[in-house]
Amino acid sequence: QVQLIESGGGLVQAGGSLRLSCAASGRAVSTYAMGWFRQAPGKEREFVATITWSYGNIYYADSVKGRFSISRDNPKNTVYLQMNSLKPEDTAVYYCAATSRTTSRVSLQGAVAYDYWGQGTQVTVSS
Figure 1 (cartoon, one colour):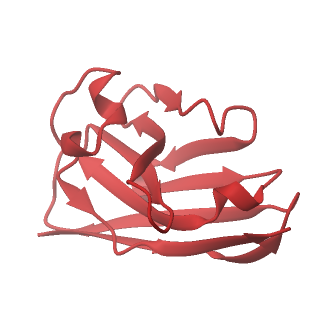
Figure 2 (cartoon, one colour):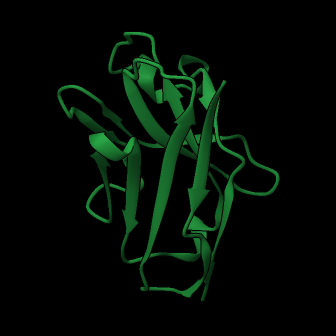
Figure 3 (spheres, one colour):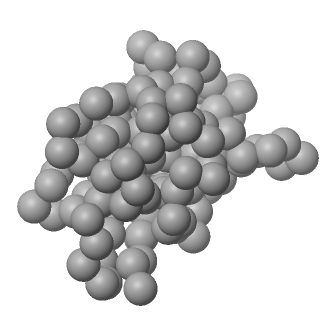
């Protein structure tokens, strides 16, 4: 079983920064992509960013472009999400996800494309 362990969430003021990390461990799996989703209270889980493991192709939700940056460390099986210029509307539980299936750019922005999920880490941005 693959486990994804997130860290780095917390409370920050608007305009501040946070860096989330997600480390994959457990059964060896050929990872195609790892990404981040978030879910605010009363809202559906939404795509934030994703990166393909071999080629490093990166895709962002429009709402975070220019503010968030996703990166990976292949030897450590870890993906990062650097979040800058945070806004109160970024407040949510952030989930790390991974897939071993070759998937299109469009499909990677949907939760159903991912096989493995972390437990989530809370990010709260105060105004």
